[in-house]
Image (cartoon, rainbow, N blue to C red; front, side, top):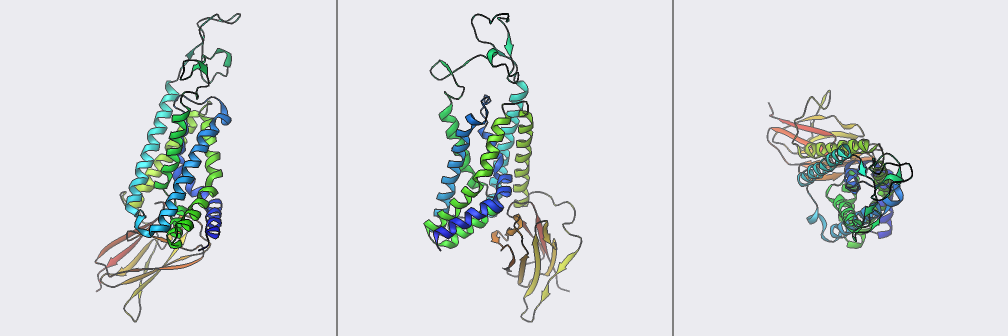
Length: 356
């Protein structure tokens, strides 16, 4: 495949479909860009960590694409492993969000600088971080013991942490990322695979940059608690997605009002048709006879949501935006086969029953 065409395809996928889904799954990691001491210098000072995050993300995706193109499916992460990584990433985001909320709650007044008080001022006055009175704030000492920007002494660790967080996004891929990873495998070359995932990383970069700057800006205002709550929700969402993808959550209620039943052809193979829609899989429950092979035809019609990628029978399947893809299953015993979209948001079932 032409690397330029693969890059363009990845870029288009990132801009058109990857922004929402990737930001939902991976965006929680951006809470780690918030400085432990709070960043009170606005979005201009928040740009270097965000840029480091995006650079680390681009490098990791490009390297992963090259590995996938070179080694093929051997380096792909299975659905169960990916589910465990989603749970771990979501837990880390929850911990970061809780720390941010506790830090904000416990933050009080900081002592004013030593020395003569300003005219008419109280020499023992203090100022709160949100007061906005910069003349009362104590200067922050840098690594060399002098005064200066609060980021001076911790700039390098902050940028290293930001780059590491960006690289960690490859362990929590969204549905669009999984699709591009399979494209990288099918390219059969390191250059083609690298081009596909580099295009995806660049296509989603504007959304991640905006979200990262927004979080760092909110952390320096009275809305910091709101940012912490949003990060906490993102972390819990990621944990829930991972647990649903791995099948570790109980299924409450029926996923569909009616069940579809497989039809057996003259060749003895059962055939099912399931629609992958933006709202989930229809029918959500399909019924087939145990002990006979099954062909499931997954159909789509202008579907750009996460159900375009699904994990079934411990493998990932990527569906076209509009079209069909056949998944063949060997004869199975009585029981239930569960499958889920690549982000773990929507699930479906095939129930295998004994033939009378």
